[in-house]
Length: 64
Image (cartoon, rainbow, N blue to C red; front, side, top):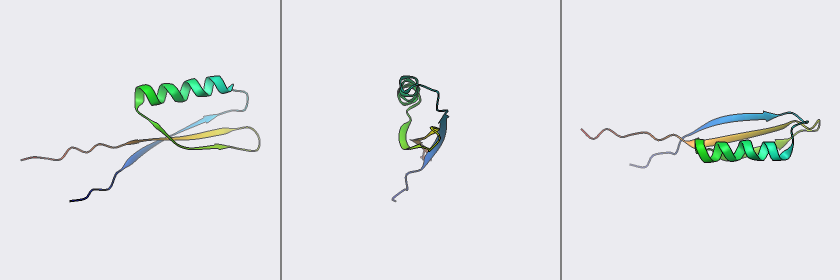
């Protein structure tokens, strides 16, 4: 039986005055310790940066 992969998402928003190194460290920490991966990143006209992270939802199958 083929199952569809499901993801959960988390959105991080960084204002324009946050340095790139701080953003990079935050994303690295989420990836390393929370097993998140980068799904999408958008830089808006005013400098606001929004990042979507995702990770797989692992469902355990009953084996009774």
